[in-house]
Image (cartoon, rainbow, N blue to C red; front, side, top):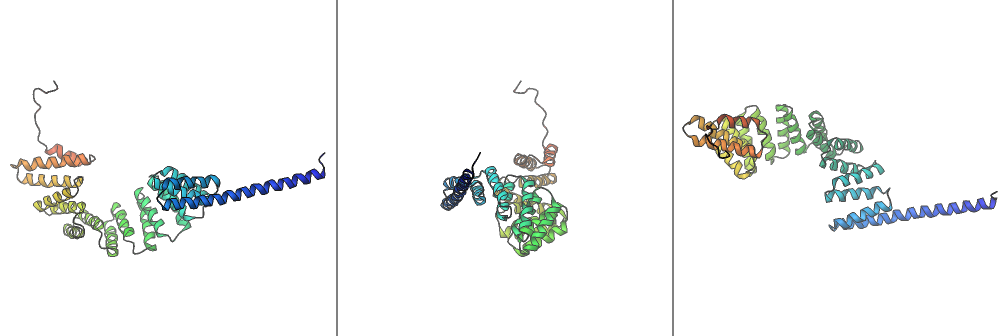
Length: 334
């Protein structure tokens, strides 16, 4: 039988062991905090490898250390290891679900990984934790936009604008989402509201002009594009859109010049090559004896298709207008 004295001894020993274990846990937590601080200093000194080593040691010493997992996730993100960043940030969120910053960072990593469903889910959690945070609402809206969920994107952009009425970016993105739904007048209003917040936005002016072009409002588009080019004369898309506008206004020489400028500024602008070919072919149809115009037009279309093969209408134009040659009676491969 076990005596009362032995039981008492065992109880005392158990307390001593438990106290030792707790003391060890507390010691590990303190060491983990120390390694975290050393990692942050290394990160500030642009010593990423050392920072990663310190953060990894911090979470090894204390696996329940939410800040350690968070900092490790940020370091992995900076290194470009997005999958490892996601794993560490997931653990940080699990350990401290009430902290909004790790949730936002996790959502950002999901977006970089093009995991839009997970990104949206994380941003929605962040919105619940920080309902007055404009950046979270705006990022949620862009995820919906990229995913093609335009109704939800519009709703989220509008919520973001209520939080920050002076945000030009939120208003211009709202305009793009509305334009994608074919809501031209609503899109025009959103673009103009954006330009009232910040008038020096050539991209927004080009987007506004594109909506005008869809409505066949050539003069309005022309004015918007002229302003865009005044703001940034090197912006190739503005010259490309102006070329299209001038073509619709039957100013073919000016249109060709605008397209040439767009191509000079960005030789990879497939739309500019295609439009330049359309202008040259239009001129050729008025001057059918000038086959040089036809040949240059077809070559411009070829160059556009090389840059962007996914243009079925342009392929059809090439097939329609290219010279048809009879096959020679003998071929070299024979």
